Length: 253
Image (tube, rainbow, N blue to C red; front, top):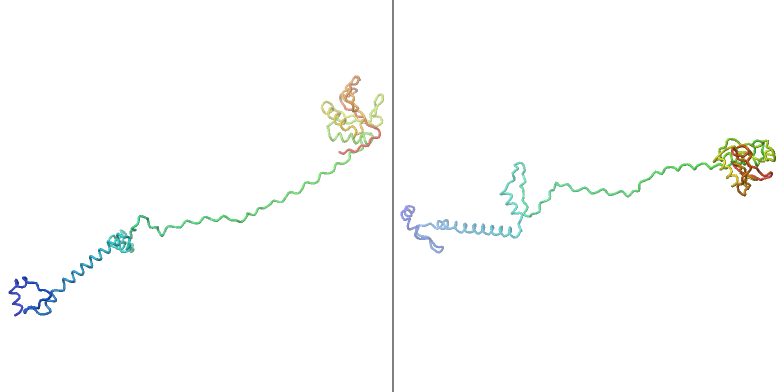
């Protein structure tokens, strides 16, 4: 049989390799030789394809292209430590960190309002009442003449005096009996002020002269008088003022 003939000659099978142009031996079937020759070309083709794929991968890695296959290969070779995450962790090929998608964006600063604040204006206080016009001074004062009484009442509103004397008995010639004289009972600084004030308004008040502290003044300056023996007679406790008989006086109080 044919099978027993090949087994009896093993060296004859190994000593000669058939070439593509050889015709089948008398002991081989036509399809048997083809089955023995196809694995070699297929293996060479697969090896060449693998070498070509490796070359392409290396070239893309060096040129920076094909980052996605490289990342995919790294993801497959280095699984994440967490067993609960289904998505593989990818590592960036650049030094810049990948921004996190969960980082909150900074809130925009509030735009200042352009509306002018409304200011509440307090109501203006009512104007003060007008100052009342001063009234004319009274024309009544201890039986003196009306214009003399007006000056007397006016001086009382300016200075503090103990009292005002009008009609009085005087020895010798005097303006008191006719109601044309006044005595402002005071001493010291107040007497000085009253005497100076009356002399400053002598014409307006219709005054003829003033006697104070043993001195006489009719508008020309002070002159001393003779000693009459007492403070009252020498006018140290009051200012004496004499008036014209028909003066036109208009003063207010």
